Amino acid sequence: MQSFWTTGRKFVPAFAAAFVLAAPASAGDFSFSGKMFADISQITQHDELAKTRSTATDADLKRLYLDANYVIDPAWSVDVTADVNWLRGKRDPDVWLKHAYVQRKFAKSTWRVGVDDMPLLALTSKWYGYRYIDSLGASMQKLDTVADWGVHVNGLLAPRLDYAVAVVSGGSYKYPTHGQRADVEAVMTWHTSKHTMLALGGYDGQLAASDDRRPVYHTARRVDVMAAYADDTWRLGVRRTYGSNWANVYSVDSDRASVWSAWASVRFAPQWSVFARFDRSRPSTLAHPSKNATFADGGIEWQPVKRLRLALALKRTASLVNDQETKVSNEAGIWTQLVF
Image: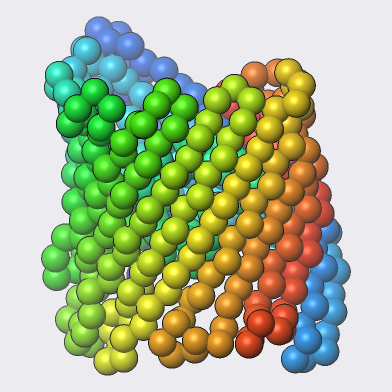
């Protein structure tokens, strides 16, 4: 499979077309906005088995979101968001459609048809608050996806209880394709107070697998539990994820994976915060039970203006076999988020 777009040259006419179609519609409200995640850092990698060590300094354009939104009336709207990604070592950028949906609002629910954010990752990013530094462990282990094509619904079940459901292709927004059946992700969130929440979510599907070329043996499933606290000073949270057969849809053998992530941050001055996070994962509990992986980061953030965040951070990623580190990556640098 190939990405929807693979170079910036292909992106320009597509996004320009969306802009032209939306801009003349003066009867409603048109807006254009963007968000950028970028970093410059030094990475030192050590492979204990191969006895190699390397150090390199480079920069990444981790995300550049360009969003065009047209509000037709209080009930109907249209949104298109391009996602530009240019990582170190790549010759050309990757460009995809992250959002391209028609939205209809009802009294207690919102429906979106097209490509939109997946419910659980969107919820996690909102409460975590430091997505521009890095994604959480479940995403690193490819046990969830950012966005996908399909029907997305969210709404209220009770004053403190809401839900979100996505019936999607399973191929993710980068690969607009389909398989034998639709995949489903759902999450229910109980807002226990103004600043606290408990969430239970899950996924069931075949990740756009098709039997055109090879047989499909398994269904990919995931169960997630999350608890979090967030106010103007503190952010605290933990997420636990259990997955099955995410890499084994076409394999006769079954496998399992588990990840837990914990995070904390505190704003100790109007423009300054400190943050830390730790993840531990077991990517293959049946086939390779002795293998584990850990991720940790920490740093200090300065927010001179509302639209700009700058962070000086350290990261450490390690692969372990029988609790002995075999590969280690240490990274230090500056990460930034700019909203415009």
